[in-house]
Amino acid sequence: MIYLKTEDEIELLRKANLLVSTTLAEIAKMLKPGVTTRQLDTLAEQVIRDNGATPVFKGFPNPYGPEFPASICASVNNIVVHGIPDDRELKDGDILSVDCGTCLNGFCGDSCYTFCVGEVKPEVKQLLKTTKEALYKGIEAALPGRRIGDIGYAVQQHCESQGYGVVREFIGHGVGREMHEDPQVPNYGKRGQGKQLRNGLCIAIEPMITLGSHQIALLEDKWSVTTRDGKPAAHFEHSIAIHNGKADILSSFAEIEAIEGKQY
Ligand code: MG
Ligand code: MG
Figure 1 (cartoon, rainbow, N blue to C red):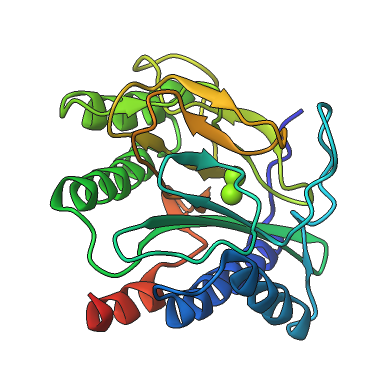
Figure 2: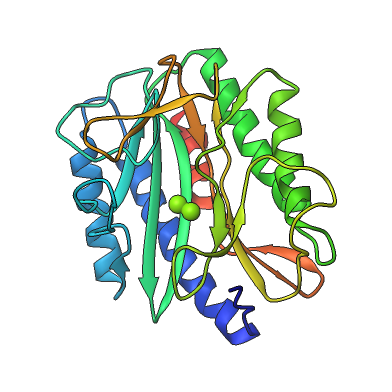
């Protein structure tokens, strides 16, 4: 069931998403070699709760194992998504995808950014750049009257034409009072296929792109998803509202990019 949002609801979604963006920016400030993902998780939970929100990921149920124990997913290098924060220190040359979800005033924010830790290999930086570009290609395709398949086509075309892998098993989704609502938003697809996009539709678009094969495997913790070939993966996510005839991005990377500009 797809719930189209009113303008007031879209503004509430924007607030929840901008809190995710603020949280990710705080992580960007703290990120450097030697920091652990558990330290980043502690910071994230603090920022979220200090702003009167709750971390949606914490306690998230898992049909295959224990519920998710943290406020962020922290996925290092070959981990595609759902990495559990731990005490391993980040190293120079690592990449780290931080996915974060908030619930504020009854509405959910959901956004993800892949960061460089210190100096990262050019081929890996290029993977990050292409994945972020693919996110914006998907957003550009998310116009009223077009279809879900147009989004996936745009993402897939941009990445596969450059030899990257597009993960199939994890996809974008509707976002609202629940973090995961209908419709599903795959990162692959055919133009003109799938549900039609309408004003009031709010979705998270989140390409997960690999440097090698798109094949993945689930680790023993029953959360972390790795690339099967061990090559790095990147993940960028924005929540958007389709309204007033356009795709309005509710989350923001502006603050993160300002910090990265100085750092890298
Ligand atoms: Mg997310
Ligand atoms: Mg999501």
